[in-house]
Length: 166
Image (cartoon, rainbow, N blue to C red; front, side):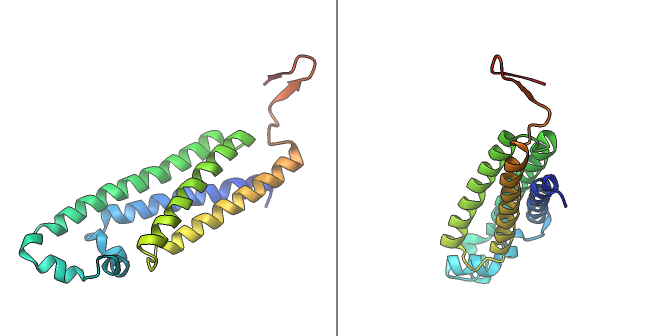
């Protein structure tokens, strides 16, 4: 496998995986139950107890709405990662750095929130997988930068004037 594939394929998998997780929350009949054990630990009660109280008669509907909205955003973020990666083809150092930096911020924020609020969530494994994909892509990008000058094969520098041309 060449370096270009090691840069792009992990990013494609991250975008696809994120979109698939979002679809899970969008279409699960009771999406809050996908992370039931972690949520009940955070709430310090069971969903059965919560939903049994008269005041919470429509809590299930509310949670479904929230999780559908959440699922749509997760799906959209995955789609945006895929769109950017396909459009930019991650051919330039700048395109790779922008995407890697953004994904590191997103995954870092996810880790912080998951470890603070839902450390027993099975979705923590997805975050580990995304982090591994981003690290693999970033490592290959660094190696590619050293081997070909940053992946700017289509740009030549006019050294007499310090300008670039395509």
